Length: 423
Ligand SMILES: Cc1ncc(COP(=O)(O)O)c(C=O)c1O
Image 1 (cartoon, protein in one colour):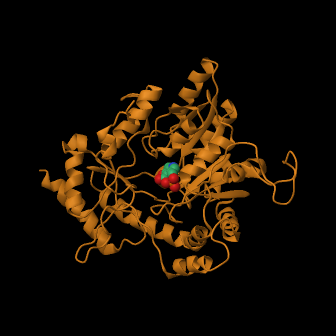
Image 2 (cartoon, rainbow, N blue to C red; image 1 turned 60 degrees about the horizontal axis):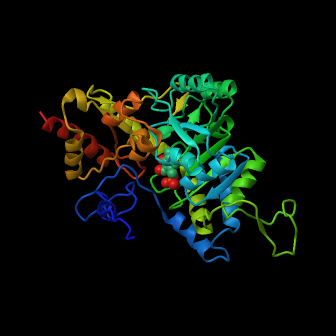
Image 3 (spheres, rainbow, N blue to C red; image 1 turned 60 degrees about the vertical axis):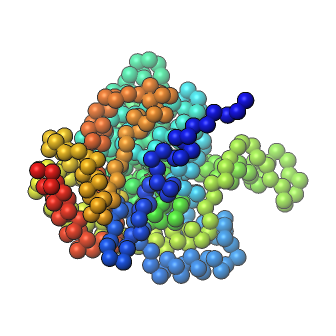
């Protein structure tokens, strides 16, 4: 039988030819006009030198630079073990597999996150549920999470893991999450992709102290980049060894694990893994970028301060709040505009900003409203009202270290001008 062809799928629907909507769809700088996307990498000559040196070395992949990058990640974020992988999604997938998530397990995450935070549970055959976000921090609301946990408890069901996301760079309420973990006994994962450099209780090393496993992404819009890349951090030697085996096809040469040993060439596979390896030259870029993380963070915080001062005095906007226990890392600057109260179309506003070369993004379309999650897990509109209201109002506005004072003036002024144009 001829397979049914879905033309809409073949044309890619409304997507641009570009496959990653986090990258600018236009050149950053045309000869006359700058184009501002919400995020962008900062690459300098030291990065080029670092990559070139590795390209000229004996190792292009799985060599000493991967190990060196992992060591630097541990030094910077306080984990005992780090495994660098192909991307952040691969990291989450491996966390799911190495943790043994399986069919029947329940994994809870935030509806305001990138798809991968939920998809990793689906990859492992587990079920996904969500708990609504807190109105101020936009991260998982521990009160709402406990409601879910209690409900499952009453049905004699146990939640296997909670994937908490330090959304935009604002740490979750980790003290409360930890208390819930003690009470209900689930695994705690930090999807930390937005927050390297954030502080919780004055500590930049908080992620691995609170969570059993921590996931990072080094996509170009993130704080520091390897092009594509990610890492899993933990304090658990057995867990980390599993991640390292699974990232390379599930192959092992460890004599302690082999069923037999035919010789020095011999390897065995005990479970299915993947090729989720990262290359040495990517890690060379990562090492060079990581050295500049503090400088990048300083710049991101200065930009946030500028935006806070500008938008904070206008009650048409809601600026991101920062909890007193936290220092924000500003991967994103999620600005809310009260479109509903102002009777302004978010879509029209977006288009008008685009005409002014400001390419906004929305983080995120609530995951539970994705057709896949609606159809497979029965979610519907109204399930997580705080997240849904946030989605109606949020735009991620340009936030990356290369922005100048002039750029910020232009961006903020344009916001006001466009809002006024609706009058
Ligand atoms: C919160 C979150 N989790 C996971 C990922 C996945 O990372 P990657 O794009 O490196 O696969 C991202 C990337 O955008 C993210 O923002």
